[in-house]
Image 1: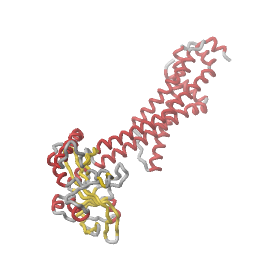
Image 2: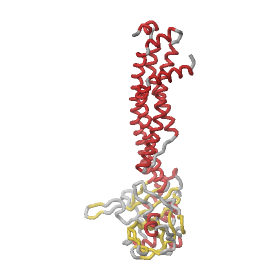
Image 3: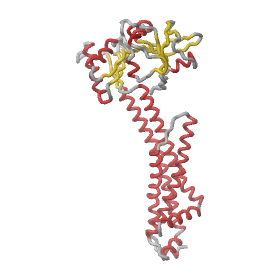
Image 4: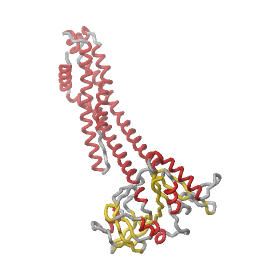
Amino acid sequence: MNFIQTLKIALRALRTNKMRSFLTMLGIIIGIAAVIAMMAVGTGASYVISQQIASIGSNIILVLPGSTTSGGMRTGSGGAQTLSSDDARAIMAECPSVAYAAGTVRTAGQIVSGNMNWSSVVMGGTPELFEIREWPVVSGRPISQEDENGALKVCLLGQTVAENLFGSADPVGNIIRIKKIPFTVIGILDRKGQSPQGQDQDDAVFVPLRTAQRNLVRSQRSGIVSAIIVKAENGEVIDTAESEIKALLNQRHRISNAKEPDFSTRNLSEILAVAEQSSKAMSLLLGAVASISLIVGGIGIMNIMLVSVTERTREIGIRMAIGAKKNDILLQFMTEAVLLTMLGGLIGIALGAGGATAVSRMLEWPTMISFQSIAIAFVFSGAVGIFFGFYPAKKAAGLNPIDALRYE
């Protein structure tokens, strides 16, 4: 008996008991649909995180000031004013593994344009900051070194600030007031979206660092920065760059081996890589949990196939009596089991894809259905049929023809 005949007989047997066949497939359908939907949600989450990582920039090291002690109480990182613009320039000039370094200061203020106003973050930075953040200007021009050297009152607007102050109008060339000080808008930055911490990166105004230090941020010392953002030449030398920065700042700040540094460094690439790995682990966990229902569905198929063997004992005896071999009977029942699981797998894939799309639309959460996840789910459904269908098929093939013919 060839495979085509076996397949026709299997389809006829499944059509004979349509409801039972559907209920048998139900566990597989639910399992495959759950696996596809969960993996789509998990992959979407990984994509969101990777986009947020890309929005910050690559190969970034953050240098923060140290802490201060007052009345026995120690503040956290950033409590002291220990970093300066000169430190940032020295890092870029003297650390071979560093591509760019930019000192920054940060404050908050009310931004006013005509009769419109908006509360936002104001960042002071050198032109290198936008190279580090990989943040282009989509309208107007970027902050130049001349703006920085002259401490000119010019600014760049993030998309959120521009929309809330000017709507759809082009703000370039307009005057806004930051803490009652007039600034000329020279450009609009490209949209960045949310940071991994959930903050709107586009809700910010950027001004030259010296302008911010002189006009917007009060400091006990001139040239003080709240942080230095560094970009390594590439991902392979980021650890080397971090070591070079520490050695240079220890030398500049006269920090001996016995003395605690007055600064700290953070490798953002490592922190964000951990976040991405956590997302992937969660995606795999969701897929593993959903796969349990596939095992349950496989057990259901085995039970139904055992019942089918019992019900069709006389049929098996007749086939053996007219010349069917044990391998023919084995193939017959294996084909039925695999057909059940693969049909259930196809239906489950369709439901899983539809469910993932529904989740994406209702919750506005990106879901990504990959061909790889569909292929794995389909192959796995077939493997479940082979694994759980083998025992009933073997039992059917092992029946004695005479006993099978006598069975009532």
